[in-house]
Length: 184
Image (tube, rainbow, N blue to C red; front, side, top):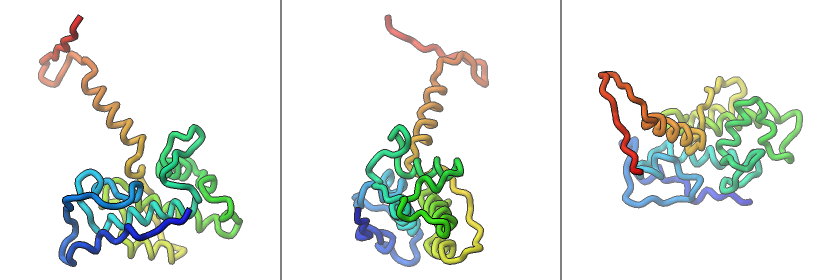
């Protein structure tokens, strides 16, 4: 496994005054492309932050982004990292060759920073300057990450809400009923 950073740097395409821009064609390596770029072609300086977060997760875990992980091998690398971190089992995510008593705090800090980098909403992601500061300074307060982008849990929740919205409920705010016609 040899991660390469050749696909990063998309944010350099636009001028200094632009905070974000649209592209007509999506380019990049699947797994490293942030959701706003994959879905709408919008890239920004936070696009590189997302890619860096994925790379950092790969480095500290020694796992490929393209494989499914976890006890039932049904989670993406991002979901798996978040679940373990959220359950206080972050060291289980780490590559065994990196595990020693002196680096466990640093590895958990890297995990938390990486999870901040892969947030769904670009405004929730830190800037690269903030990432650098968090990695360099021992006493920096680090925010608590939310579920990562492309989370299967997020997709399942959206799907469940859609189904609940069409569950055949016969009441509404204005007391109008909705009939659901089903063919025999």
